[in-house]
Length: 171
Image 1: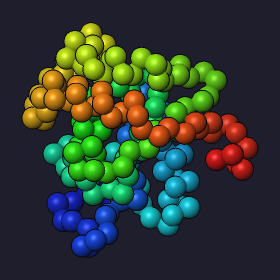
Image 2: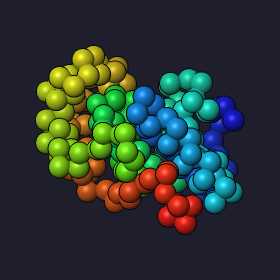
Image 3: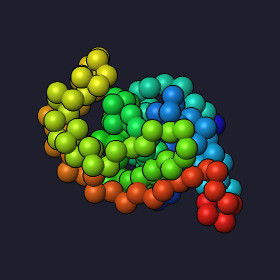
């Protein structure tokens, strides 16, 4: 369904999960996760390509999710909307679970580089993705604040490995 301004019934969030991903690197994996999780839980998961019609509602959708699933592909930390989703989840105390892609052909998410990249976000984000910091600024996210918040949180999240080529019993 399309995201609307109305909220979920009191006490129950609209989405079982919000799947944060970098489309270029992980669109198929995000869709696969959405399908599998929805079948398992019998509830809808937010995936922006299906559910987002208005960027202003992005943060509201994160807050209205039981958890944020971060599909950890190589460049996800350079994507401003993914960073905005993570900042929003941390502020709203929405649990974050990392799903690390373990697939041949994918350059891996570098766990060892994440703390430094996030701690120096004011410099590293513009170097990695010129113009990205402007997206966060326009969303009223201070880069120095985001750097402290993300740098102290994201490297510590629980992360599970995901290989969509594995046996169904491993998924």
